[in-house]
Length: 251
Image 1 (cartoon, rainbow, N blue to C red):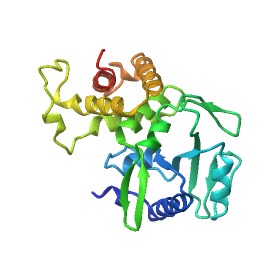
Image 2: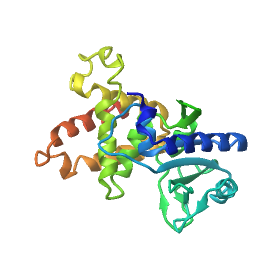
Image 3: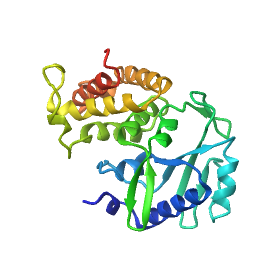
């Protein structure tokens, strides 16, 4: 199935509109979140109607707010969230160009780690749409972001999304057949994609992001959802171990 066909028509149109808007403003961005995962051929155990964007800014979110409000989107009570007339919601995370590694301060007083978000913009790939294209964070970076976020908020969707990516990463490619399994003695074909995701993330993420994601991975090994008490727990634990081995070859 064509990944774009999994999206609602209004989502597809909104993505093309946002891409054109940011392109005219010369504003770098990357689609992140579940929609970004779906657009790269990963089947998720849920649907999504909202959009999440990481946008490069000089100073703060107001730069993006002015741009979006001038083109028909309205601010909401959640100050980094915007709404379209058709009900679609768009969350925008402003990533300051000069603040690599620093926490991202949101207008509502919260702050989050930028783990993977700067790199999502820097390494964004173009995914075609029927009427244009969109900048999307690479799957390996999305897996890293989702694993990190799964440790800082209690939303089962992040956990599920992360392991969907690790399960299906490179499943349609041939790279998993080119691995030296003798050199990677703990690796099997079923976990090879997760190892490749970790290795690819290692090549993209800056040191501070790799450290944050590696710390999150260690926390997840203590998560009860990876135990024998949960269906799929041991399998997911093996996937996480493979991702860790790719992310940090020294482990």
